[in-house]
Length: 130
Image 1 (cartoon, helix red, strand yellow):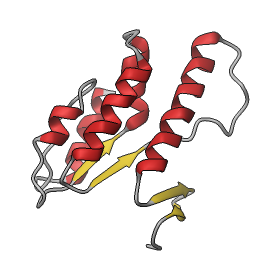
Image 2 (spheres, rainbow, N blue to C red):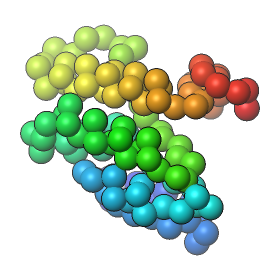
Image 3 (cartoon, helix red, strand yellow):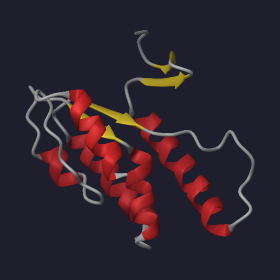
């Protein structure tokens, strides 16, 4: 994972600032100015961090949505759709799948635009066309 993160940072170049916030995105979002932009990459890893730490997922989601609601900068959130496959055979994976689905629904409800990307092809599900 560390190698993957380093590769992403290198691909983005020096114009990007990388902030690692594995749990608390609120302070990072609150510190942004209106002339900045934020890419959260990704909500799935953020949720995984909370799940594995046995944090209260409902509270973490509520806090994230509140921070997004008050953030003055434009925010793009990358998230994975994990509900299109088979139902996992173990309890932790099923809990994650359900929590990710609930998080994606909540993020999409609050978002101005939702774009699903499959095989590199974007499809606008909500909001103005690209």
